[in-house]
Length: 374
Ligand SMILES: Nc1ncnc2c1ncn2[C@@H]1O[C@H](COP(=O)(O)OP(=O)(O)O)[C@@H](O)[C@H]1O
Ligand SMILES: [Mg+2]
Figure 1 (cartoon, rainbow, N blue to C red):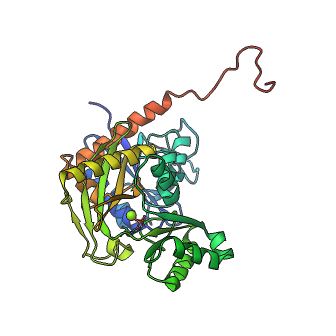
Figure 2 (cartoon, protein in one colour):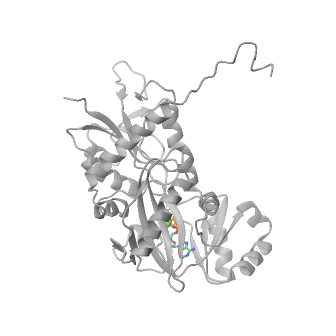
């Protein structure tokens, strides 16, 4: 019998999407086949503490109160967690692969991926680069534009500029776009801090609000369009799923529509013309490659009603993972059931780790050619 793989599932975290993450982790943990995997559930509190529990269910149910406090040392070779208090008898917990089921800051933005790289652990999903880019709506747009992908017309304003030159910024936005526009923090998800502004007064309060949540504010032309999403899976040869459609029952897909209301409909597959389907899938793969994605991502689009034009909206490197979330549903509809999807993501994590291991990190200078003398 082959040894079971120890999979650490990371959930919770220091982000506005803490609760969503717990729900996603619940589904992931239930789908990990106990014959093949040994699950080590790791809950991260809102205070950032890492807690390990004996049973995932208990840890999830107790909302992180009863776990053992552990640390992940940022040095390679340890391959696991250490007890926070180095008492005699405190057990280290070995880990083979990590599945970060974390959304937003300190989970999806590259910081966690950096720690896991330092610790030398394989992990599911994008690396530091794609994760950080995926969290910055402006930088990703620049990469998409460079890859000739269609992005919505936008303007990025550092909040220091908004604070110093309010009139100038208001003037610039109005002359560039007209109304309505979307105003959002450039580095946040789940529609937090976002406004659809219909006039100058709303624009001004929208800019103030977004400035509370990020150092950079993004203003976009508002598209009157259908919202289409595609799931991407793979490392260097990624595949795209069938597209799905989000039909929000509110003015836009805001926080309430995303997480608290029943009204929003997910239509899978999205009713599209076969040509549109092919195009949106091709754009999704190219977007994934533009940010050098690994493992998984969900790529979101707008299909403008008036013109039929497709615009890339954003890439999400750790999409929602509850059994009714878009990412797993899209794969289900593409012939990859939930359990198989999790297996594949773990395989991709191990493959990517091996690929990383092939890189040399030391360099012997040639004789006589001292590094410091050059
Ligand atoms: N430029 C835009 N035009 C039309 N709707 C938009 C635009 N930007 C955002 N929205 C609406 O707001 C929602 C959330 O915006 P998004 O940029 O996807 O942020 P988040 O990262 O929080 O999901 C979108 O799903 C869409 O409903
Ligand atoms: Mg979005």
